[in-house]
Image (tube, rainbow, N blue to C red):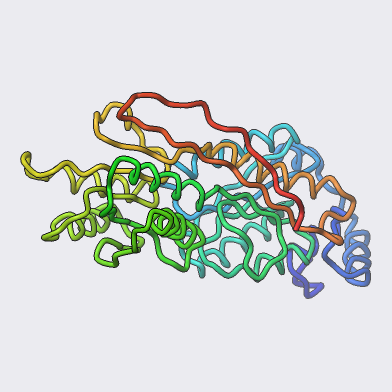
Length: 341
């Protein structure tokens, strides 16, 4: 039917479900064709596929191998289940081109809304999706070139606090294993590191800075570059859990007589409490990121026209420092929501 009418299957789906995003004339053409064919929606099949009035939510992440994303997915699903919806998961492998393809695929499958951990730093294509009638919420990144809701972690504050802790412990040469500057998390976490150094009267020394994205082996090699210098850093600050693991692997080969390097990192690390190392992590709740993102999405879906005159909202998930050398893990702080921008 879609081919005969010269429209996409998504347009037919929207017309049948009474969703916004298509013109009145197109909707009338689709419904007229449906009536001529004697089509009746199979509500039982739709219920089996999705489970409720908001049938299907798309969740798009960058790396299925990272435990952060599995926990985020748990949070999205917890909210979706309350609304009788199901979650369809897609992965981009951190490739912006792949993100465009997976978004299109999810839309063709009839998702009612999207929660996206974006692969790139430009999100105009996601803003276009929302303007066509499908609500979008970003997770772990603010929108760039799109007026959509987002849920963020306090990347700047968490990294600043971790660097302050290292400075309080007497460190002046603090190495930084960061992320590319093009990433929001990369720029914000470096900003927190640089801010803490500046307020302590310490200049950023580029000898001690590496900003890259790669597998654990790549990060381990970068960590060796830092700690094998003639005047190495006495502490390392890592920008995510993968970088922390790479640093830990590099540190295990240190000479027993070499000065111990203290480590602080963003993101919790599995089994960190049994490593018995001077390790501090910036901890937060990935499940809460998913719950907050899904809640924003269903708030939009609850409206008769979910994206009409929409004012984007921002929710910030706070962080807390966990010092595993003391084996004390404080209870995570409560999530705070920002005002609409």
